[in-house]
Length: 137
Image (cartoon, rainbow, N blue to C red):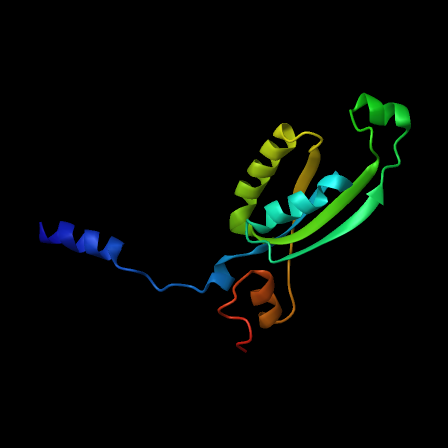
């Protein structure tokens, strides 16, 4: 009985907690949507902890026949680039996929790219939305 209690206590005793920064790797989320939906998707992605985002406006280059066959009549696009924590990636991609299917003219694509390094601890803390550590050396 005593051994069982010791095992349970050992498992339930908090281990040394690592800071959020060391556990939360960053990814670059690239989302391409119709230009008219860019603000909606930027707000939506921000709700998953994306602290930094920017949008690039583009114009499709595929022939009109192919665009029409794919149901992409409007060639105006927005490419949203977001910095997001690796732990949020599965949820945001799943939710974006659902939005792409259910929103009228809300089709798009989304994928992530690993961010292999960020120079400076303060910049990393800011990008990983670790506000409690921003400004601390």
